[in-house]
Length: 320
Image (cartoon, rainbow, N blue to C red; front, side, top):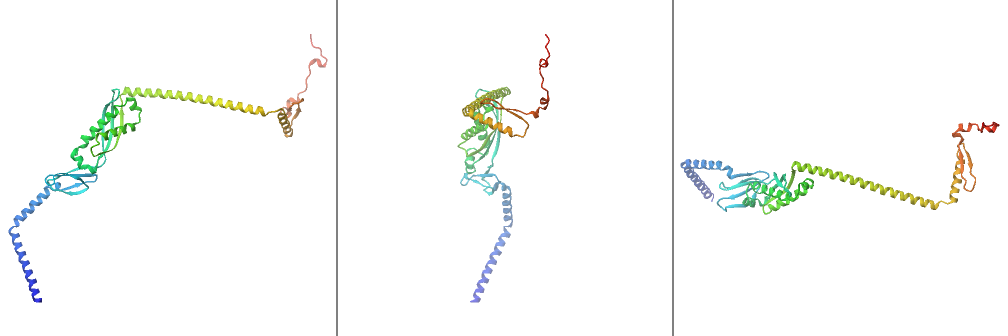
């Protein structure tokens, strides 16, 4: 049994050796053709390398167009990295990052004056519908769609305002209106607008000076109106204060009686009499008499003066 197994293995090995020798002989006979085929393949690979190995860089996406098999635009966006395609097919690369476009537009206002508007548009294509954008517009969609839509939207919105309204209105209101108008212009296309910013509004110099002069006069008028309002408020304050004083006096007058005033006078006289200052207290006569206080210490010179009498008191006879 072992001898039969050994013979079968040896025969198999001999068959393989003979097959390998025949294959080697064929290769030796066709060596030139094989080498020529390899050279042609390498040349083909090097020549069409950029058409076969397509690199999609960050922030970009690819749209594949097939020329022969399942021909047409593939409804799928190719992501970042290396993509291998047939050399007869073509891949279009789109930038999917936010892009910025600055556009200057001369616009006629409501009253027919020319105004220079400078707008900045931020936008990017919808990555999920990139093949549709490629079929409808193409890679140069910004020149075909964004620029005309921006100019049309700015003219449509600015044409509803006067120069004075453009000068004084809130700029974000105009920006929102322009953005809405641009979205309506390109609503059927897969383009996403992030923002439309009005960077500058350039009015004619004469109109600009006239508007500034008018605004200065309006501010002066508002200042005078504020002054009048302040003075009127001061009048109201004084009137309220006077009414309060009058009410206070009326209430006090109702509570003041003769007995209360007499009692207050007695209390004040006692407090003065108890004070340590040198004084003379003279009580008045009568029912409502109040004390008269003379502080002799405050005016000693007056106390030292002798009493004088008229000349005729000493017997002198006045001259006739």
